[in-house]
Length: 99
Image 1 (cartoon, helix red, strand yellow):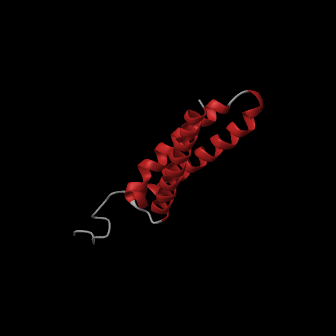
Image 2 (cartoon, rainbow, N blue to C red; image 1 turned 60 degrees about the vertical axis):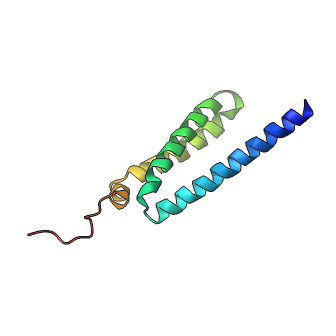
Image 3 (cartoon, rainbow, N blue to C red; image 1 turned 135 degrees about the vertical axis):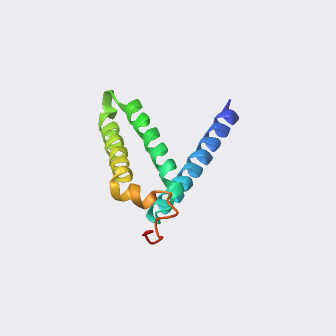
Protein backbone atom coordinates (compact mmCIF):
# COMPACT_ATOMS: atom_id res chain seq x y z
CA UNK A 1 0.00 0.00 0.00
CA UNK A 2 2.84 2.43 0.73
CA UNK A 3 4.48 1.86 -2.64
CA UNK A 4 1.23 2.67 -4.47
CA UNK A 5 0.97 5.97 -2.56
CA UNK A 6 4.56 6.76 -3.50
CA UNK A 7 3.87 6.06 -7.18
CA UNK A 8 0.71 8.19 -7.04
CA UNK A 9 2.64 11.03 -5.42
CA UNK A 10 5.45 10.86 -7.96
CA UNK A 11 3.17 10.75 -10.99
CA UNK A 12 1.06 13.61 -9.63
CA UNK A 13 4.21 15.64 -9.03
CA UNK A 14 5.47 14.90 -12.54
CA UNK A 15 2.10 15.91 -14.03
CA UNK A 16 2.05 19.26 -12.25
CA UNK A 17 5.69 19.98 -13.13
CA UNK A 18 4.91 19.33 -16.80
CA UNK A 19 1.73 21.42 -16.55
CA UNK A 20 3.74 24.28 -15.02
CA UNK A 21 6.37 24.08 -17.76
CA UNK A 22 3.59 24.10 -20.35
CA UNK A 23 1.98 27.16 -18.77
CA UNK A 24 5.37 28.86 -18.78
CA UNK A 25 5.69 28.16 -22.50
CA UNK A 26 2.18 29.54 -23.09
CA UNK A 27 3.00 32.67 -21.08
CA UNK A 28 6.16 33.16 -23.13
CA UNK A 29 4.15 32.70 -26.32
CA UNK A 30 1.61 35.28 -25.18
CA UNK A 31 4.35 37.76 -24.32
CA UNK A 32 5.74 37.32 -27.85
CA UNK A 33 2.25 37.49 -29.43
CA UNK A 34 2.53 33.97 -30.87
CA UNK A 35 -0.75 32.92 -32.43
CA UNK A 36 -0.57 29.34 -31.09
CA UNK A 37 -0.57 30.49 -27.44
CA UNK A 38 -4.11 31.89 -27.30
CA UNK A 39 -5.95 28.55 -27.35
CA UNK A 40 -3.93 26.90 -24.57
CA UNK A 41 -4.18 30.08 -22.48
CA UNK A 42 -7.98 30.13 -22.74
CA UNK A 43 -8.20 26.38 -22.09
CA UNK A 44 -6.02 26.56 -18.97
CA UNK A 45 -8.06 29.46 -17.57
CA UNK A 46 -11.29 27.55 -18.12
CA UNK A 47 -9.75 24.66 -16.19
CA UNK A 48 -8.79 27.13 -13.45
CA UNK A 49 -12.40 28.34 -13.27
CA UNK A 50 -13.53 24.75 -12.75
CA UNK A 51 -10.91 24.30 -10.03
CA UNK A 52 -12.13 27.51 -8.39
CA UNK A 53 -15.66 26.12 -8.43
CA UNK A 54 -14.46 22.94 -6.73
CA UNK A 55 -13.00 25.03 -3.87
CA UNK A 56 -16.29 26.89 -3.30
CA UNK A 57 -17.77 26.17 0.10
CA UNK A 58 -16.50 25.74 3.60
CA UNK A 59 -13.23 27.34 4.58
CA UNK A 60 -11.84 27.51 1.05
CA UNK A 61 -14.10 30.22 -0.40
CA UNK A 62 -11.23 32.72 -0.36
CA UNK A 63 -9.12 30.37 -2.48
CA UNK A 64 -12.01 29.94 -4.91
CA UNK A 65 -12.46 33.70 -5.22
CA UNK A 66 -8.75 34.33 -5.85
CA UNK A 67 -8.56 31.57 -8.49
CA UNK A 68 -11.74 32.76 -10.23
CA UNK A 69 -10.64 36.41 -10.28
CA UNK A 70 -7.21 35.51 -11.66
CA UNK A 71 -8.73 33.32 -14.38
CA UNK A 72 -11.30 35.97 -15.27
CA UNK A 73 -8.57 38.62 -15.46
CA UNK A 74 -6.49 36.55 -17.85
CA UNK A 75 -9.52 35.75 -20.00
CA UNK A 76 -10.47 39.43 -20.19
CA UNK A 77 -6.89 40.27 -21.16
CA UNK A 78 -6.72 37.59 -23.85
CA UNK A 79 -10.07 38.62 -25.37
CA UNK A 80 -9.39 42.36 -25.42
CA UNK A 81 -9.42 43.89 -28.90
CA UNK A 82 -5.69 44.66 -28.80
CA UNK A 83 -4.84 41.11 -27.78
CA UNK A 84 -7.15 39.61 -30.36
CA UNK A 85 -5.54 41.68 -33.09
CA UNK A 86 -2.02 40.87 -31.92
CA UNK A 87 -2.75 37.14 -31.70
CA UNK A 88 -4.76 36.92 -34.93
CA UNK A 89 -3.47 34.50 -37.51
CA UNK A 90 -3.55 37.01 -40.35
CA UNK A 91 -0.63 36.60 -42.76
CA UNK A 92 -1.68 39.67 -44.73
CA UNK A 93 -1.45 41.95 -41.68
CA UNK A 94 1.94 43.42 -42.64
CA UNK A 95 1.27 43.79 -46.36
CA UNK A 96 0.52 47.24 -47.74
CA UNK A 97 -3.09 47.88 -48.73
CA UNK A 98 -4.06 47.11 -52.31
CA UNK A 99 -5.34 50.19 -54.18
